[in-house]
Amino acid sequence: MKLSREKIKELKEIALICRRDILRMTTLAGSGHPGGSLSCIDILVTLFFAKMRHNPRQPKWEGRDRFFLSKGHSCPALYSVLSRAGYFPVEELNTLRKLNSILQGHPDMLYTPGVEVSSGSLGQGLSIANGVALAAKMDQRDIRVYVMLGDGECQEGMVWEAAMTSAQRKLDHLCGFVDYNRLQIDGWIDDIKSLEPLRLKWESFGWKALIIDGHSFEEIWEGLMEADRTNGKPAICIARTVKGKGVSFMENQAKYHGLALTPEELKRALQELE
Amino acid sequence: MEMLGTRDVYGKTLVELARENEDIVVLDADLSESTRTKYFAKEFPHRFFNMGVAEQDLIGTAVGLALGGKLPFASSFAIFLAGKGWEQIRQSICIPNLNVKLVATHGGITVGEDGASHHCTEDFALMRVLPNITVICPADGVETEKVIREIVKRRGPAYVRLARVKFPVVLDRNYQFQLGRSFTLRKGKDLTMIATGIMVYHCLRAAEELDKEGISAAVVNMSTLKPIDAPAIVTAARQTGAILTAEEHSVIGGLGSAVAEVVSQNYPAPMKIIGMGDFFGMSGKAEELMEHFGLTFPFIAEAARQLVKRK
Image 1: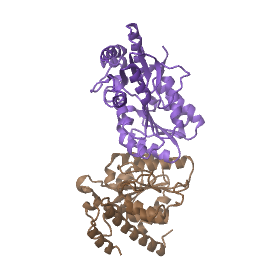
Image 2: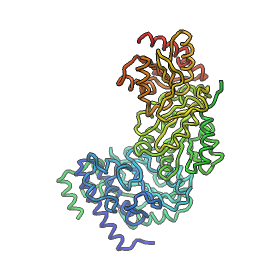
Image 3: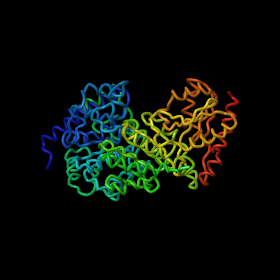
Image 4: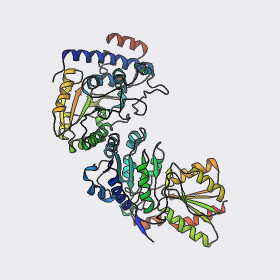
């Protein structure tokens, strides 16, 4: 099954709205992580608006597919998608990181409808996704479990402990994404601690590994379809992405990992995202 | 004196509970023989997950199973569970306040010959500082069974510390464990000994010695370290005017600290904290180590004599 042209157009429009949300809410908050939010947003939009079975009016519906944001700092992307999907009013985005907000600086399941687990400390999401996938398997519940990992996050040893578990348990209803924008806080991953050869690493850990363009809805969709088709092993889509994608002066700049735009910069950025 | 292994009781109790409660699943990190989760694994192989030597993944997977509607018990040695898993416990169990039960065996120095790397005299401190979690160290095998049954009934994170060695049984079979409530095993008027784990036994022995000298020591089993039974501690300070604590744990951050937090702020009284000094253990037989590090009843009795003089 291919995505229709209309659907791709719709996803593109939503992603544009979400990019604007991400920049606006982080500038309003005066802090946050816009760079990595912009790099993973197209995948999140595809999951929430095209792929996953979920019901924003019943966030705890048992039959829902699950999405875990292991790279919790990219929560502006998740918050935007959740609000645009209807989990909570879009106006809440203006409260990001403020006292008593439902939108914490890093995701907290006790505060935000639609957030599946609290995260922020890197490395933990895949193990948790495995546990949920195992529980579903035990109960023969037909759900799919998705997890978004950061590329820098793959330097955490726990990711690879978990990767062994997913393969050992043949969790073929689990699909991971690596947001491979090649930048971590302190600079280029290849200068700090390279992940390469990343595809071979995942394959040697027993996974079906694909390399996709993380900003192409067609390729994201094809990755998801390939994951659906994969039997007996988990699948990972290593998504080539651009940190700060969509805003010329933010692209490939490590400094926008954890830096919000100034109001002037925001104005310029929003003009690019018309 | 009857001896019971707290880990043996844990293993058997898990199996009994699992027969009634289908949600119970168990995870271990390649130590199921030692933690006794092997009993469960044998009877319920499809509900048992051996995660290999990967404690962080053990915690994370348990979290996922809890989110998926299961009631996970995760076990390993205390230092590996509380130590290697600490930040995972904080981020993924305690912050979201999830229903994951952590049961650690091989707490303290009675681990013995394996030495400092395998001893654990830090777990009370590590766990007690985390919001949302309940921390329990049973006094004996009798209490262990009741503790394991009780934490199944209570939603939320729990950490239970058990031991490698068998403990003398100090509690009656009819004893009722109440989470968050201490239990007075012996009344006294000159000082109160508040102890946890194997040290309850040593305090009872010390109290017998002291009794011969005319020193009347109360002995309280403080198996729940968190939430601590503050009212009982204040009452003890008021009634006996001196508090001695005893634990198979560092004197920093454990039961002694928890009791001192209550005593100093509510009813200041002289205190003595018995525990492992600020150093690591070493290899030796369990009983030799207990004596070497000053945790047996003669040391407790001597500390009590000095404490009473300070009143």
